[in-house]
Length: 106
Image 1: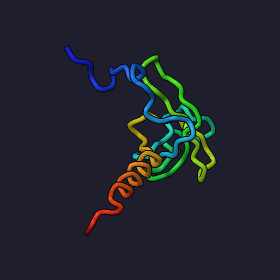
Image 2: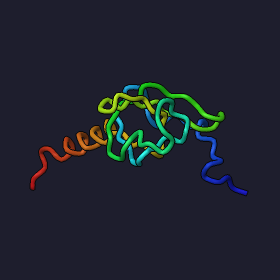
Image 3: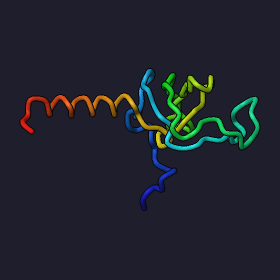
Image 4: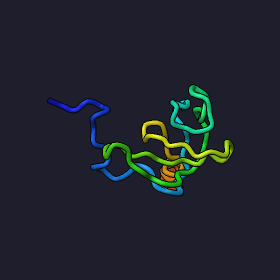
């Protein structure tokens, strides 16, 4: 019997993002009632917003929660890995790819 998606033990593997890493939100994130001072259902993060991972925690000894500082919004919001993509790793792979193409005839 296999585990469902939400039943995976994510913390058995290394974190996908590290503190200081620049990330982009891949989804709109609304307050589910756990963010103080904001109404339930209020947008906290919009798809495409860019921020920096400040810290990594865990939830239910199962999932990584990334504390992401959204500079333009002036907030820190806990995010799951599936809600983020790395901008630093994307730039690094683009840079490596463009360097490997240097010096080749076109």
